[in-house]
Image (tube, rainbow, N blue to C red; front, side, top):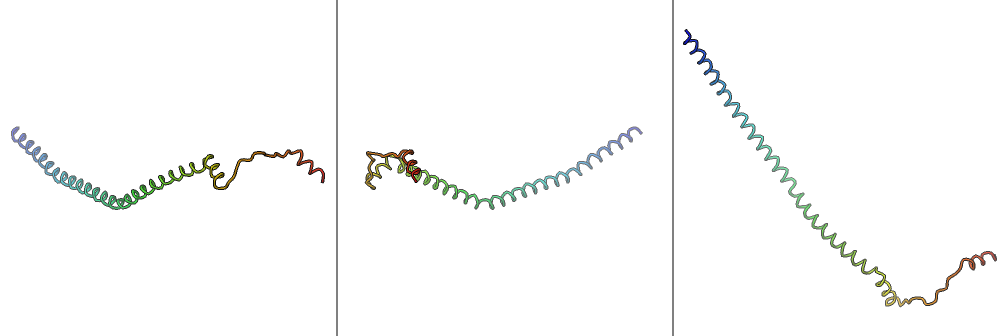
Length: 121
């Protein structure tokens, strides 16, 4: 009797474990299939995003190159302005182009002489 009880108990344990193993296989298969589908969906979304942003990236590169060219042109213009507006250049151009000379005698007006004329009225 003990042997038959032991045999039934062993058989029930084997049935339970084999049943759970059989139940686990479809769950594992379904979960792996789901994981593969999620990875494929992620890759598809990434490809869509990259294909959408790729032309914008090329535009950004072109605009960046244009910005660098304009910055270099600004530096050259600022240097040219600094060279042409220096005091020695301005004085030289005033002498050569406009035939201007420094004044030898400068007559300064005093406020008292100007105010005296105003009182006389």
